[in-house]
Image 1 (tube, helix red, strand yellow):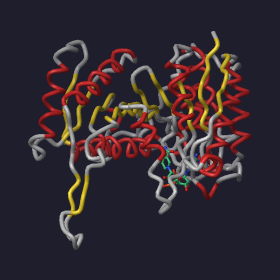
Image 2 (cartoon, helix red, strand yellow):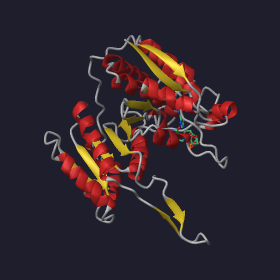
Image 3 (cartoon, protein in one colour):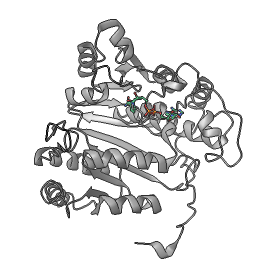
Length: 367
Ligand code: NAD
């Protein structure tokens, strides 16, 4: 089986980390033909637009894309390429797994959850305006529809079933947002009744943040609206080990675009310093999506073992905070080479050791 995948290297550290992912893809032995297309700064220079139609056509044709981060130019008049891509391709589900890897870089080594965020409406619908001429008051309209709520909630339950996850938790603020919040809540309750085999519950957004900061290991699949999902997925990326190791995916109707949570980190561009793990784990998600489960397991295990060994890791994984004993940092390309070297050597059938948690900080604060 050969796969044709659109590759968008992106800006800043994008070309370095997508090269790293390509190198690891090659090590899996899975045949992938990469269709490389430019979006972002290079596309502005060459074609006068950061998101040429040819990029959208390539993703629609191949239905699969691996994407590096793209800089949003400030003050140039161009809107975010990332937001435009989501809207144009109707990539409605943003999925961000937060898995602590090898128990490193986190106070919560048992964290293994996934945030499913509605990515097309809510407070990011773009309906906002100044109320008066003096710009002393403003409104942003929070659009929540039953159609988009049903679609994302069904997606979350199907993901839970497919990945054999334990529970789906809806996050909203229905006690204060009596229409939009209540609509999402009702949609969730009615959809949950269609999945009686999957336990489900609800949290208010504020309580969810507190719960996650104390005991993220108790959560599994979280489904929520656009703004809450944006914030929770960054919070969870931090809980699980930081931006350098946080992958993500965007799904639409028969389309999937895999991109890391992090941005283009312009200050590290071209320095061969950036952590390639997030982009490599995007490749892992892509392989899993197309059913290449063993190759995906090999990639995850190779990443896990490289981080656990702490011999060839980039600066962010070599510092105190990630590791108790600092180690000399390696380059992005050296870490990618090490992960690629391990891919054919690891045994994906042996269960990964489950790091033990440090326990709750203060049992009196349990809510
Ligand atoms: P950023 O994620 O690019 O960088 C923030 C900091 O995180 C960096 O300075 C660096 O210290 C660290 N970091 C990020 N990725 C890392 C990696 N792989 N390895 C090691 N350290 C890493 O966020 P920002 O500075 O707010 O944004 C920079 C640009 O990226 C902006 O133009 C923004 O619009 C864009 N952006 C794009 C996407 C996307 O393409 N999906 C996402 C977020 C931000």
